Length: 301
Image 1 (cartoon, rainbow, N blue to C red):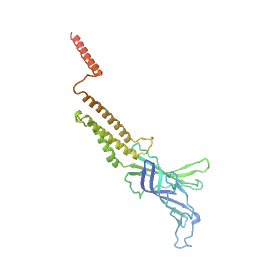
Image 2: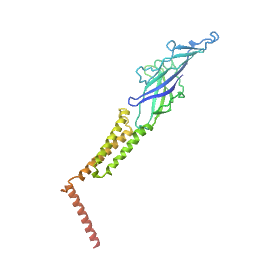
Image 3: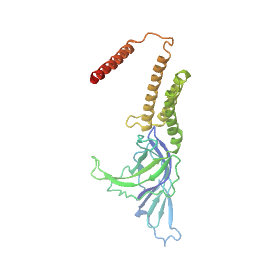
Image 4: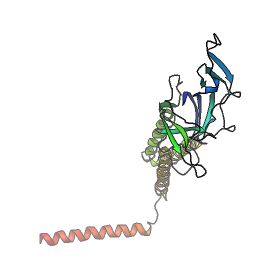
């Protein structure tokens, strides 16, 4: 039987897409060669063997991202008189996990921990699953643990006829949004609202351009902060990054419009020649009013 006890989610590296967890593995099996008669050995009910002196299943994390691959600390195997063996190796596991940041910072991640025997097939080692234990879980400041369901599956390879069983535990966790709401969302919304003040300032104040550029630079800084957290991938772009980009485009256009307005406001204040498009527009307006007035006189007649 195989199970695990999740103690802590230590780190979720979105950039490298690696999940680091503190886990105790729980393995139990029966070895008939390690049985003894308690009446012949009074007081000897259990014996502890180093894991290298007796047989134990070579259960490994298939999707390990650790340099050593096997991250468990090798402990003793507890054996009782009936041959029942219990092996509880702890370890800091680094597993590869696809992080979908599209809904950041309101995202829910599903990271899989796939365990199985490295050399024994299903005919030699019948791997059975037990539910994961989270009674000793230590809460994480950034993630809430939703659940850790398990599933046993079998896979066939072209080389062998026997199946190869594995047990996969899915760590489902939800991101806590308070930190990002206070440090990213609220400041961004307030800065975006300041962009509207550019159109309320009088043209003679001289601060219209300065305010627009300041808002644009502030949004750029916040977008760089988001880019440092997110992985460099084009599979899914966070909605908050799309919001920052669209807001920067709108603020940039507002700065361009403000420049055009100021250019016409301060253009030749002592009077000058009207541009051709202005003359044509004025002539068309006069002709339209005259045509409408003639039409009204004809109706009255």
